[in-house]
Length: 221
Image (tube, rainbow, N blue to C red; front, side, top):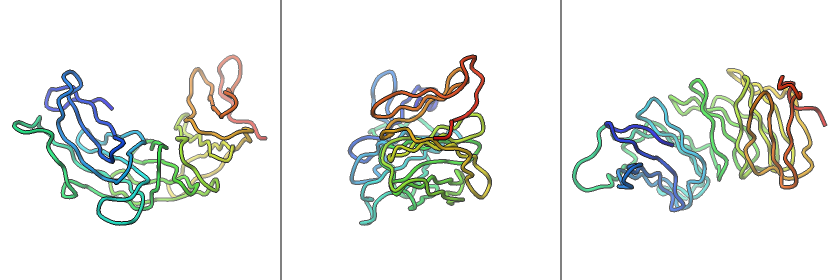
């Protein structure tokens, strides 16, 4: 993700070495780094309130033998002087949530809530300000890669077993509105454009909607 830090354009990303890093987008200069896992941070990073970063991983944590975590931490508010990168630590964390084992599935942020899928096949809803898991919804035996999409007030959630779900998020639960059997493994995130939802599998790209662009939702299998 790209943002501004003290008037400088910067890029924030996860790395294969288990860190979240920040670099000057124009010069490549390293600015700060926070290591959160023994393996890759492969999901996309979220920016919360301009000064907080949310990241998720599915590898072994650096401070325990458990696997997986979603963490929110504060990044520097001023462009640092002197030696760089600045090394952030657990003291910079706002919260952590150990319900997550999430590999390359990226989280989605909408109106103060984070939605993500985890390795055991659940869709989780987390309060972005406190880190509390508000609800979880079991959708499949497992999940590794495909990310959920938020569009039109709903979540579009493909799973590794070839099922794709339309879920309406409520304050205390996720409601399954519809689902489709895609006929092949779903590894990619869906996308929305011109009133349609596109879902890719290992064998085909599917478009759901009407030809004139009016959205009608995912059809039943």
